[in-house]
Amino acid sequence: MDDPARGRTLTTDGPPLIPDGLDATLVLVRHGESTFIVEGRFQGRAESPLSGTGRRQAALVAARLAAPQAVPPLPVPSGDPVEIVHSPLGRATETAEAIQAAFRSAGAQLPRRADPGFTEIGQGAWEGLHRDEVTARYGAELAAWRRTPLTAWAPGGESLTDVAARVRPALAAILARLAEGQAPGTHDRPQVAGYAAPVPDHRWSIIVGHDGVFKVTLLTLFDLPLDRFWMWSMDPCAISVVELRAGRPVLRAHDLTAHLAGVGDEGAVPTADDRSASGAL
Figure 1 (tube, rainbow, N blue to C red):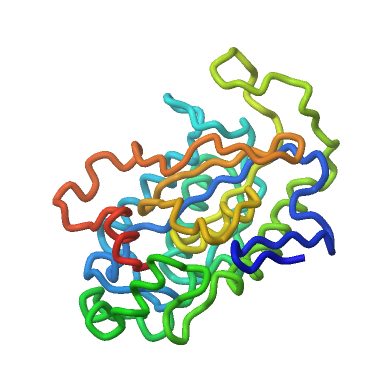
Figure 2: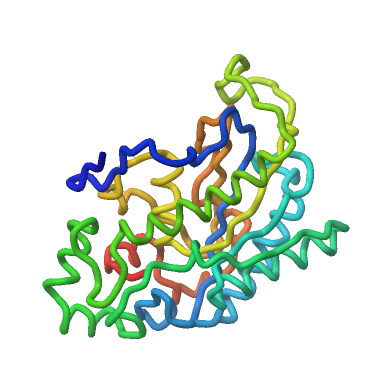
């Protein structure tokens, strides 16, 4: 059954999201800074290319992912990723292309594919408008979106339940590929970080997307209610890592940005907290 007040689907119909016993890792990468971010405009599904800073960010996150064991190491397996999956929007595609090119330079030929399941949340009438104009013209709707995102959204935009309905099969397809030919893992092993342990030898994949759709992605992976939408935030070209341990998701890292040190120091880029406070995606 469904719990509409919390936005949590409790149904057991259909296959599970995470294959039984899966040992794998997902790396989430938000796209680089776009021109709309610089201008303070709502993006949603509107095309907004990477800015000059965004292209530098994409190159830096690509280099970091192509050398994950560089100090300090990322909590990812030692082999190459299975694939790069990305939103079809240009800002995510360009970031994914930079990551693919960095791996190619390191000698790895990674397949890359676009999946519309990871397109940013549609923001309808707000797309392309400056946040001040959205506040002036749609103040009541914007306030409701900020407070109760499960029951309010941009006029003509997407509801969170609609977004979750497309994210889930996109995630399931990635996880199914990671599970192909792999034996189920076990929880009977050390679970606490900090103790000496070998780098996991399971498979991993990279997803390049957007702040809003990644909020729903994380809620979906951790089986949390959609009304907790605002609990997550990701900066441009930040890295988050979710490890699946025998089918159980573990957040190993979130919103890592050390690889971007020195980029955008001029202060022109709104922080993720600023964007979240405005309700812009």
